[in-house]
Amino acid sequence: MRNVRLAIIGFLAVLTLAVVFFFDNRELTGLTKDRLYPMMDEPRQHPQPLTDSVTELGNGIRVSKLYSRNDSTGLYFGMWYRDQRALINQEDEDWLREEGEIEFLVKAVDSNGTTYNAETEGIVQGTFSTFRYVQFEDFHYDESLTDLHVAFYPMKKKGGERKPHHLPLVEAVIQIEPNIQ
Picture 1 (tube, rainbow, N blue to C red):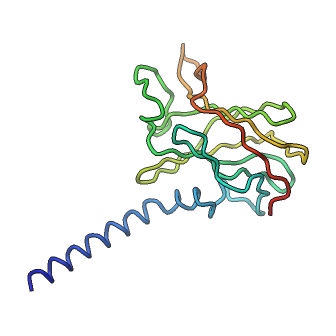
Picture 2 (spheres, rainbow, N blue to C red; picture 1 turned 180 degrees about the horizontal axis):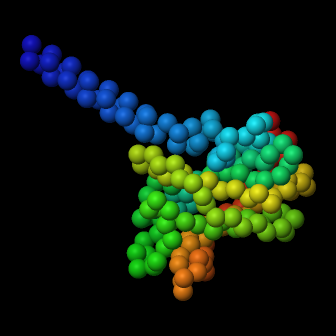
Picture 3 (cartoon, rainbow, N blue to C red; picture 1 turned 60 degrees about the vertical axis):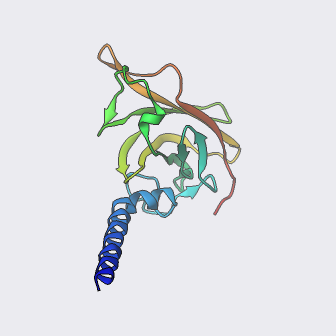
């Protein structure tokens, strides 16, 4: 009888933990599994995907699918990582933080040579991961685009000003897939 009680208590404890992790990570899972769009505001229409899968950049950073609005303006995606201490282990730097997470300047250069800059904004915390939104409002999608070079620079405060670190934490080229639906 005692073993049955212990088994029931153990089962209930595991079930409770599973429910807590599910609700704690529901929004993060939706963003990383492409069930939610990586946009801070819910779009009125389904945005146009520019890539067909998640991209692994290195250093444990992943980038969601890239999206543009249906009028081919704006570029929206998200980045996520598990542990920022593993990303940046220079504790002596005065990194700019939002809700404890390091802010990044994201620089994107498209295959036509146009450069776009934006800072990460908004945070979705999960149990073990953090998701950051990246939005380039001045981006214009052109069907001749073949790739996008992205670089993530941690931001720091220097002399009272916001400045990106001189070296990117991670950078990569993301291939644009034409006519994805």
